[in-house]
Amino acid sequence: MMIVATVSSLEEIKLAEKADLIELRLDLGVFENLRAGRYIVTFRRRIDGGKYEGGEEERIWKLRSFAEKVSAEFVDLENDLNDEVFKAFNCKVIESYHNFKETPSFDFLKNLVESKRGDYFKIATMGKSNEDWRKIAKLLLEYENLIAFLMGEEFKFTRLASLLLGSPMVYCYVGSKKAPGQFELNEMIRMLEILGLRR
Image (cartoon, rainbow, N blue to C red; front, side):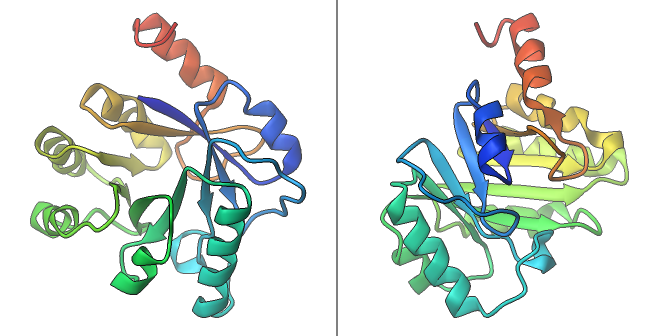
């Protein structure tokens, strides 16, 4: 399992040294003169909870250029992008689905996972009931290379629980929270140490 620290500035990268991977949010900050590292490069659109509002061609071009410049280990691509975009990257791909309003039906989510083109599939949806958590837990038990959890403070526990059900990554914050329900990086590390899952 890998702990991912999501960052929005060069200052936050310094706070993320204990993380296994660092997610660079290009829509939230400027990252100049970075050396190669264990990075996930993400350029999130506003409809997916980000700040980017420009054209898609420019976004994908910037994402690809930056990923190559820092020799990124992963890029995060939204699941509604076409196949050509996925083929344009020379690193591993996390294909992601975000829904800030609700958690769709199990069958809808299952179809997304089974149609994946990336190396990993990521599901982050807004939790409203225990039934939503049952959908996510069932998916995690049935599929490999799936990162899945519920957003929202009430369902914060699902980020930790997802690791116990096989999720290969958990996303944390340093500095300021980047998404509802995120754990702070050192808090997550302490919990995993208590559970004997990290030394």
